[in-house]
Length: 149
Image (tube, rainbow, N blue to C red; front, side, top):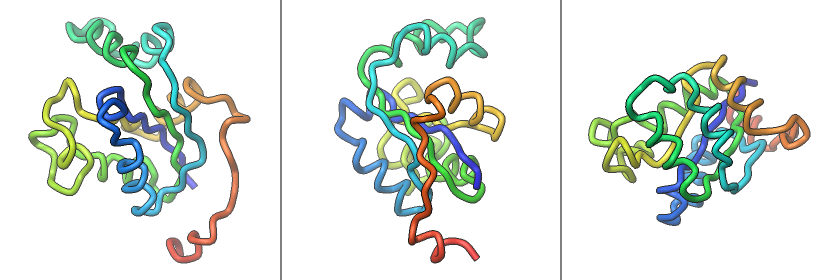
């Protein structure tokens, strides 16, 4: 099974949307195998957004992600990266399809509720950046038989 990294950003945590977002993810069938509410150290934020270092919005990204707690998680499932990205929706909430997390709960790009890895490679990098191996659970869920052939 594929794993992906998803982070509920400070705006969603402050708006008390963590439960609703996790519920949507679980209803889709993705399995939560790691999760933690945390204040993000500046060094972790800088490393997470390293590919944006030269962009004009880099400092704002780092400042925002460290401004309040986030809920970081690892999800598991068949095509987890693609499935998570689909239910998250487009980066710009005004372009996100209704029914997606951003389409229903977000308004602006700068406060777009949630981050999801954009590839299997990014997911692996981000999971290793945010979680230690011993923080990730490996378990079988009874629902797996109803989700996968």
